[in-house]
Image (cartoon, rainbow, N blue to C red):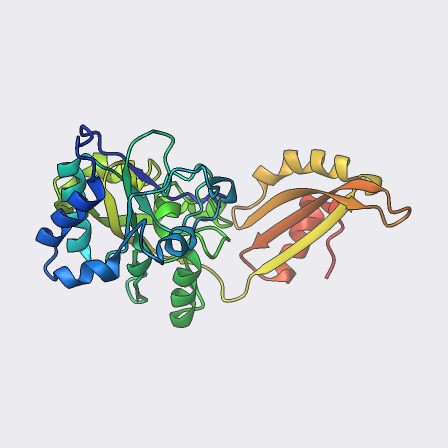
Length: 329
């Protein structure tokens, strides 16, 4: 998984308005564009709104960027449908405001909800756009960018035990940020990154058009799958090709300290991990722990694996390829 959370930046480089009240002008613009102006109070949060801080921090996963000195958006928009996003894009262009798109908030650099530049900006938080539609017969899923990876997994699991999407293990990571950043997961050796399994998308571009793969063209479709969806437009939803998995998989974790030859095992792992069948993904986590013998601190290596098969298939494989790890039933 990309550890990141990887949620995206949509930078509009128009000249900043000379107005001293950009928020008020922006709200007026929205009121003219929203079909139901009364919904503005329910979907738009200004810095004077009592719920502004809680909405801003609700999915801000990087506490390093949640300090009093961190630049914050003029407004936060929580759209219910595409027209709200189109109106926001229009008004940002008209009033020279930069635009950030948030889908989950797992962004190490905070590009989805803050800025390193001294410019006013608006955040579109896609939290209300999180529908997931699974087609088991065709082996596909349409998922909106506001859904989380965990919600996507849950909807797939309700309908099939033998279909999956090769995404990450962080269940609160937003689908939009994950897919637009590539999407590293436990099935990548077998099925590639999550973005490799995107077969269509719906995107709002800078001209406020809603485009699919055919109308946006292959260059743009290629760019949003790993290049940052919000860098090129606001991705509303993604169509995913689901992949086949067995109903039962096998997992294991084996932890060894330096005193238990962890260094030699890591050295061995480097030579065999990439040669193992693509059905197995094995990684190593390094941590500092207390030694069981004298409670002094030592280093521990945890070998973690997921195997797309049964334990009876895994054991002879590990005995042949990595017997030093000592995997037993």
